[in-house]
Image 1: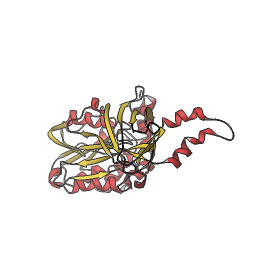
Image 2 (image 1 turned 90 degrees about the horizontal axis):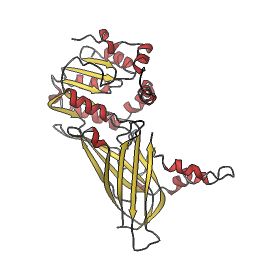
Image 3 (image 1 turned 45 degrees about the vertical axis):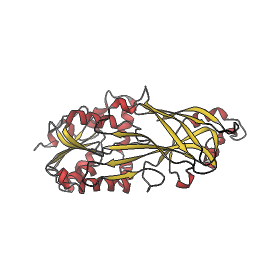
Image 4 (image 1 turned 45 degrees about the horizontal axis):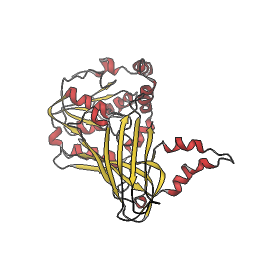
Length: 351
């Protein structure tokens, strides 16, 4: 068995971590070093919906993991790697760029799994795995708005490079949803605040405020429309090019109310299991650290039950920093009452 302590990727210490960052763009360094801190890992581990779903999908499918080689992309503190090892995997390889992997090695050792788990520090695209191919890929790659931080590209690279034909990916499906909400009080606070700042007109700041999505928890009662599934990603077949998309949506109003914003969330599915496991990050479901993403509209839409708001959602990685997202919502609300009709296009930068 390969001794990780002898590999270049396993070299510990602050200087070696810094060496790996040499030559990277500032945005890349910022992304990887953000995962050096224990707080972000504590938040993810305490997300019971997230962690329990991964655990159940692995433990309830021991027959799939038994004697298999497993790759954990973005392993963090190693929790998914240890789930896989406990489920009977032949060997697990965990890869992570951040220096938290040094703690992951300690955690794996104190749990008696050092002989079953190899942890490599480095970019997935650059490390050399101790096995030419793997049977299963596990990864918790989802970001805010599902695709923020673009870690899915790395999972797809691992799939195309290392996964055996017919191999499995955990999870393997993700579906994004959109809905309309009433949130006048908060919008007034977030956007209207700039109308009078200590007696001064700060309205030019509204443009910036309106282009920044808000990651927050939305109460179910705020939903004015039915949700609309806009895109489903199948990790067995999706390509990096598919992650830039323009998709239609249509939102049916449930009641007479105002629509101040559109929100987005996603559902995750482990469908290649004996018993599929699913979880949602929507306002109807138990809290997750992903919450929901809120996009405030410049117009207030006055909708009546049975009316529809339709349009397109466009998403693409930012040209200068691929981990940021450029998101555009177009909306069209037509009614017999011209005073209530509205249409527009809103651009948002998620960074």
